[in-house]
Amino acid sequence: MAKSYICQMRIKVLVILLLAAQIILTFKGRIVFDKYQNPLILFTVSAGIAILFFFQHIRKQEAQAVPAPRLQFLPGVLWFLAGMLPMALAYEELRKLFVEFPDPARWSDVIPQLETLYQRFDRGEFPYTPVPLPTHSPYPVYMPLHWLPIGLGDWLGISSRWLGYGMLGLASGLYGLWVGRQRAPWLTRFIALFLPSLGLWGFIIWGGLELPVSLETIIAAYYLLLAVGLLERNLRLVTLGLICCLLSRYTLIFWLPLLAYVIFRQQALRQNIWIWGTVALSILLLYVFPFFLKDSSIFSKGITHHNNSAVGEWTGYGNPPVSWSMESGIYFAVFMKPLFSGEMEHRVWLARVVQASIMLVLLIFGLWAYHRWKPKLHPYSLCLVMLYAVLTCFYFFSPMTFKYYYLVLFVLSATVTAKVLLTPDKRASG
Image (cartoon, rainbow, N blue to C red; front, side, top):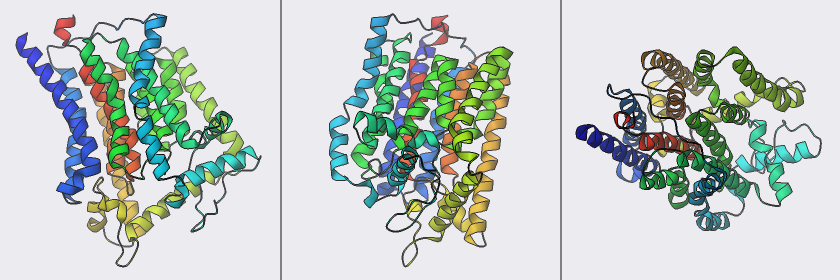
């Protein structure tokens, strides 16, 4: 028993250290390592979080944990507020950062595109046309639930940047409810409450303009919502998270077949129909009917624009040309670019082939793991760690990854870390 307890404690301490290392290496790794070393070390650290998760949950002496108790109304409210508190503590420093970068349009076209899409929609115009900016006219690639919430910000009288921060805070409150229900010591739960905010603090302290000129907080809020649904094994939250994630960024589709298979095997036909019918109806009402049917080329045009942007990044900017996102040392395009030959368009296509192949391998592994470790690893816990793995590999093997994308990855790695931290020694818990 003592040996098992010591092993559990080592795993929990190590996974927290890996989470901290992941954040630090993303922002400061290039001080110590070059652009070729840092992505390898960062990927190893990121993979280590998932490996520790699997190691903890599939050890022979472990059995299924006792179900977490439900919270009464007042304790539930307090845990919700406790979940929001770590994000709220970042308010003043985030405000200073927004003051330092008051006009996102000076540095990036992300927020100008998102706000233009909403403004067109609000005026009754078709939003998906090129956005005229001082230097170029990008074709908007953003899905509706990335820019539609800006209308809520207008109604509340706050900027889109503060709206995204507020949405992330609300999702953190739901995470706090999950933490409150876990059978774990108070100190452990207190530590777990702060994990999702660590990535935000990384951006505040070291990220410079990355966070102020993007609206990645909205995407992070959606993925945190989905992760909480998986942690809670609450299919209503999972369904809502699916809708939000699918209608804000298409990355989730590579993980979706695994979840669909798990739900098909775990739930009755009626439940499956309800979940996927709700998701399908939401996509029809929020994307297909109002936008896609009016111009069926918007998705392909968006993909083409994104691909052209990747080609431009691989070609480089300046004299001599530099691929600036590769200089940050946070993904593997720095290896793929010289490895492949031919025109840059062909090299980028080959990178996408590699990326898609990795996604397929992860899907096959997830399906195998479901059957191999089903008695020891809860299916929705498997889906959570595989969601993290898919996002990690998608970003690392993408032809073009920007640092602000990693706010979503940090949120997911925090939830996987929290699951490791709050999972008791199963022998002790019965």
